Length: 513
Ligand code: BES
Ligand code: ZN
Ligand code: ZN
Image (cartoon, rainbow, N blue to C red; front, side, top):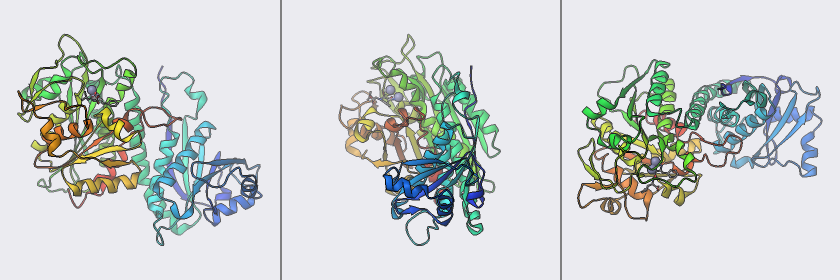
């Protein structure tokens, strides 16, 4: 049995909030009181429940808190959920994303079919708080995030949630509606893209193989006119001498692929160099002959998170029509032990021509990525960002809320940090310079695939850097955030980390590919 996952629709409109009919109306409240006059009016018409809530100490507008009251006909909505936004002057895009996510999650738990949101009406002109366009985008994204449930294979899914949630972001003023709508139009794309990534990533390895992922990419590309997909099948990987992808995939009956997605804006000069986005898609990482311990091995279905983040971001990018060409490269393989597997000690020749001594078959991500990076260079990309659940060491170093960021160009690092500040997908810059490269040199091949036990995230990145030479390159290690999905109790599993980040990065790169 397979269910359709929840259908989420988000729009924006101007309305008098007290008259909005909805199963749930979410109203934003700062620590010093309701966000604006319109939200104050809802409270007044309800007989000032916020006054009692504050007096009792039950709800004080703190972030990630909420209080629900029943309207009993006093306003048009059935229920009103007051959502805390924290201190007014500290309100940033992430506050609004989380508030919208909390409201949407409650709506789904209540089986509400319609949700109105009057969370925020700031203008963003006087201080550092977001303007309504940015607010519209992040609140729409938050609704998608919070309403998501992965229940494709749960028999009782339909009883636990509505089939469809229709959310409407509200503004009381006519003059602000246009900005809000503009932001929501973007957020509805990026939010949907992120949830698409979560679903694909959450699917287990008996359902997502390199071949089925390639079929999914083809299907996705067929749904957007400006997106083209081509796939290098095993025979083509052989003629192209993609020794890294082939070695990692050779132990599995599910043969490897290299998925290539191109998004070219109409009217772009053929000479404009493309941005390359490269994502690791190991559909299952058993470790191979260097087999992983059994405990927790099931989480290695998430080892395709980076590749799927690129796939979903390419869909969002194609829909948002940026002015710069973008190429998405997704090397996909299953890392399995068997009679045909690659082994510790093997020396492989990668697509770049560089040879690699295999010391551990569990350090496979860098072997598929190095072929895709070199291929991105061959295709003319001068800016390349890769994203991968690459090292446990990165998760040990940074925990589960921040991804590692490494690279060879400070301006590119800064651009990614700017995108990260917009989307709330946090990054932390780590080194990968020459000392780490030295450590990855082998005595019997150009490189080896593991360093010593220290600084594993940095040595892995240093290995990759050798295949991106000549380009501005950055690497995002999402092992901590991509695999376990942080601590999302409502929807455990993938959080689709990187989809909004990569999309925001490309959207801001229009002038500087
Ligand atoms: N996919 C793993 C990294 C990983 C580990 C992601 C845990 C999420 C959670 C990767 O392929 C791997 O196994 N890396 C090894 C490298 C080592 C052998 C140098 C690791 O991190 O232990
Ligand atoms: Zn591995
Ligand atoms: Zn892996």
